[in-house]
Length: 272
Image (tube, rainbow, N blue to C red; front, side):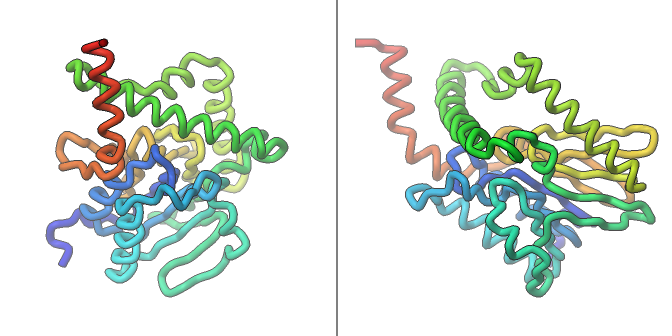
């Protein structure tokens, strides 16, 4: 049944943000179709309840849910760890339904070593003290992703490559770079205190495997910009990066916006 899938011991994905324009649900569905993990950890912000709207829930987002349910039916153990954008589910934590388990954090033993999984918003001062500001920032981020889609559409028409506006902003603002560094160091420090060999987070959308003397810090990235996942197999961690050149992309969301993209492009190239 799984002869055409990659068999993996563990897969971690986070920050999918289903229900937003920036979510690459079609690509995620293609990835999930290609693998059969023994365990799947959904490490927070899978559904974006902050920005969810009945006006925007494409078929591709539903397909992700169906794919996960199919994986459950095929025997995959699934842990859904809550994040800040799906924090409404925290009231149901420590609930299990078959091989689906809902929790805030998770500790697994991987080849005799302890791995600590949690989303990471607990380290975010803005989340703790100014949630309204965090939500405003999330709205702005989603708008930036839509603008970035338009820019990349035009760039592609002009024969140029893609660019990431949010990444350029992060790289250009010292505070953002400092926050990411502090986030990583805090996670590593606490993991050391608790004698965990691995600490696996999401939240900051920065995919990485960072090895220190005693702890390996890992971040699964996101499915908004980076399209990444963490894979553990045969005693080794790998950072998976989706390659759209090798997959036929389903364009349900973009097709709905294509006329406006086309008219924008035409007005720039052939101004009246």
